[in-house]
Image (tube, rainbow, N blue to C red; front, side, top):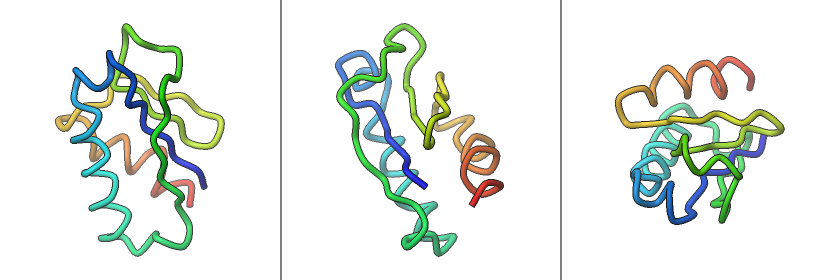
Length: 80
């Protein structure tokens, strides 16, 4: 599974680096290091609704520390 976190200007200002840290922590906590490839993406084209992530071909917008756990479970844990 490939996961991209947008680090373009808009997403950066909305906290994309915090989302990257949460991703790293949760991938490790759940033992998914061999199943999930985490990368940064310059822009995923959803600048007004960031922080945006891409999980394989699915785009997820509006990711925040507050809703991260549910998004991680639904889009990553439940699909691995």
